[in-house]
Image (cartoon, rainbow, N blue to C red; front, side, top):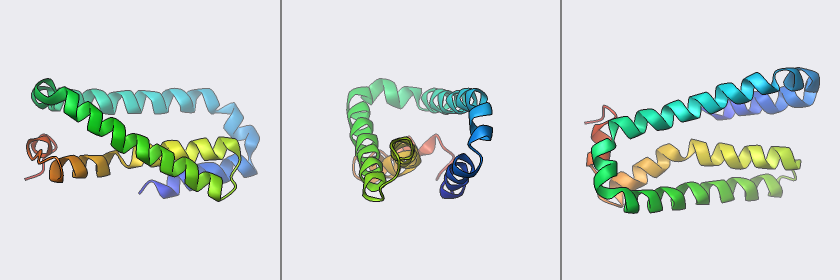
Length: 121
């Protein structure tokens, strides 16, 4: 689901660098607003669970997302991408794998209550 927009962005940046430079500021603010909005929505929906178990949840999230970021950086380096593309791939791996981190938290940490706020049974 995320690979097509990311790949499209890389292709546009390589083929039409003037377009990506011209739209850089507005795209950065749009992305930042989306990420902050998503984080705020999750915190509101899961406020009771976060308040009760915030230390363990934060440690698990940091570990899962950090490993995904590291994996993306290594993957980009192995493919000999430019430094900007390596960073992009690393961030995409980390952001994309938040859902995987949620699944891990639900199954391995036995946190079935974290799933209820997202409309799942």
